[in-house]
Image (cartoon, rainbow, N blue to C red):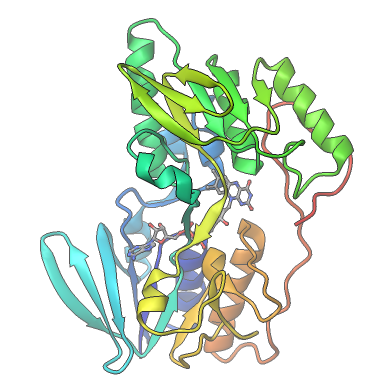
Length: 337
Ligand SMILES: Cc1cc2nc3c(=O)[nH]c(=O)nc-3n(C[C@H](O)[C@H](O)[C@H](O)COP(=O)(O)OP(=O)(O)OC[C@H]3O[C@@H](n4cnc5c(N)ncnc54)[C@H](O)[C@@H]3O)c2cc1C
């Protein structure tokens, strides 16, 4: 049997390794657009305070997976799924071709959510969703440091990632203004008391936090970029952190059922019985997406066991908590996940 996995995040890699551990016969091919290996996305939030981050973030080089008899095609983009012929189309490394599958595992993760009014200005801001994004931000910042300067940043969005990033850049010594649309930070995950505590921790670290701010758009002015709310403020760099969007595009093009994510049953099977979905992209029958490392790894191990006949009962989410990686912040109450 030929198993193809799309995506080399925690979902794709955990599934591949567990499946290989349980079955030595089936062929496993993991296809990914990444070049650098399997890396820790949560560690992106330590991308500025940790100097050796570009090496430390790599959890496993792709060659380690290959040594384990998992064929990894990296630097490759999956462009289409043909469900009738059971093939995927790939492009990259100067070649375009098709790969056949018996079972296809979709684990393409999520991209940064860009609010529609911001889309025309996408050349004017950065996101923080992948190692490629982190490297681009570090390079931009390094150009300032080389001239003994510090960039002044605007971060748009005071959710989990925006607060973590503001905290880490402030810890690294940069000047930050954090714009947030609602009256309190991380309002979806934290109690009011914990939001107030988080605000104080960020302010004490030098972050200027502006609440109730509707950012309208951005304007380029020579070497600066302006953020336009009621007022106009200029910055060296802007980072948009307004949440995430599951990558459902391939599934939609292939005619699979989608909602917020790719719809799956309690066995991670999509509306096509040969295709499964895991991780940030999988929408369970309760309408939930489990976009955290612990439940995603749990999903991936469970599916490998199920497909190799080691599990029969449907998947049940594990109990898990999360924690904002803001320097010096400990919530007093459990997070809402
Ligand atoms: C800055 C940041 C901090 C975070 N911190 C935490 C934390 O502290 N704790 C926690 O639990 N979670 C955290 N998360 C969330 C967590 O990282 C994700 O839930 C998890 O990484 C999702 O794993 P995944 O395997 O589903 O997708 P991903 O990790 O996104 O992997 C998907 C892979 O598929 C590849 N891909 C997608 N489409 C294609 C295609 N068409 N062709 C080829 N390749 C493709 C992508 O390049 C990517 O490598 C954080 C996320 C971010 C961005």
